[in-house]
View 1 (cartoon, rainbow, N blue to C red):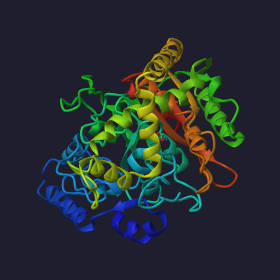
View 2 (cartoon, rainbow, N blue to C red):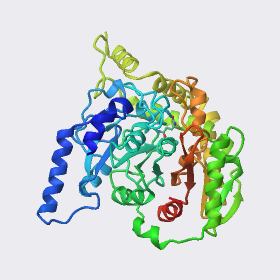
View 3 (cartoon, rainbow, N blue to C red):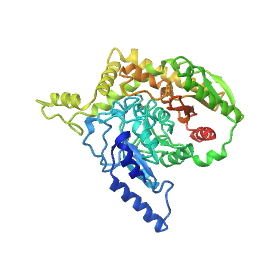
View 4 (cartoon, protein in one colour):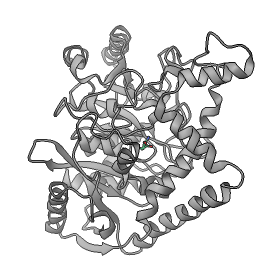
Length: 446
Ligand code: GLN
């Protein structure tokens, strides 16, 4: 059914970079065979899960939606892929994104722009726009994305699905194409919070192949949805409800807050005073880390190699000039600049210090509340081409970036529609490694 649906609608939605129907059917047949043989089934047995095209799957393309990797085929599985396979899932297709996950609309994909299923003239958000749109359009039962500054939660909000960014270190990054390593996390897109709990269960856990993976006890997330009943103390940060917030988005989130009040939750104002520095700090740290991570694409080891280079240095230059798109180049240049001698202390080091203050803001708030509620995005989905100015695009992420800088878990849950029929999402932010509580709070609304 998922294959048929994808074949029927993806010409319009353009969520996939590629898919292999025969391979998916073979995986499904293997699941059927396990069932018929009476073998123990995994928690995701036979469920088709779409994968963002930055997460490695053995034998499948791994492009990062970049010319640089257009012909690259992964020789290995990411840890999350191995875990999904172990849980019985059918690994389904390669989902479009902004090139190397840099962007908020999928318009930076070197291949094509994914459309918002709720309005094909609008963007689905990004960078995991393919993952959100595919799920919303019925082209998968769940999908995986990655979130460096909002790339799971923002497209989830714009496409009316649930998107979870786990605590930094909960889910292994082994086999995820690196963008900004201190911020990147893999997480699931689902139709319900319960499905998010099930999918997170399958992918979470310590991995010796990721040096930032954390050894923590993994609770039963699905059981927690029933066991944890609240009432909770929920914080409202005034910094997330100010200038630039669309009134329809504000009204939808306020309605959700009223719902929590009706459950007996204590709603408390909290302050996150360093919020205004978030976007600036993010675009220093993320670009610095990406300039370092992307130096591996040199035209020698793998990826695009220019055909007409005169010598080795020319080969580096031409391969990178031809392989990377404009946004990726902008970020490499910016990142190289903030790391260069003379500017390192002024920009990079200072950004790291402010990052600590941003994290401390959240930890202070958690002395008083269990979770924080905010809008996920300042506006519903915008039209394709509406944010040609990169700075305007960067500002889409004001409400999601702080969570990555602080390493916290965050979930976007659908909370209504604008008058023009576009989805609106609210964001719940939890405490480090307390996904069970965060999911329970979100589930109470869902
Ligand atoms: N939109 C943000 C950026 O362009 C976040 C992207 C992401 O989370 N991968 O960097």
